[in-house]
Length: 101
Image (cartoon, rainbow, N blue to C red; front, side, top):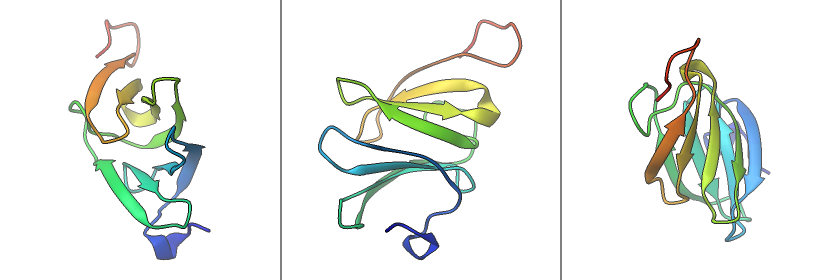
């Protein structure tokens, strides 16, 4: 079981990657963390900010059929799309009625 002893802050979303790893959105640490099924940290990416690849209060994460992570980036008012290895692909959405990312 993943817990604060695993370095997790406030976990607000969890899913499984196409490779079977556990993907969590860690709201208070502003990161996405990927763990093996046995709880070993594989990778972590994000970090607080509003630039491409950065997150601010990720609230949830889902994986599509290609294995891309769609992250609900709450405080940036957008959806960020990132590969399982942390490569930024795109984002969409914004606060208000602007054009978005």
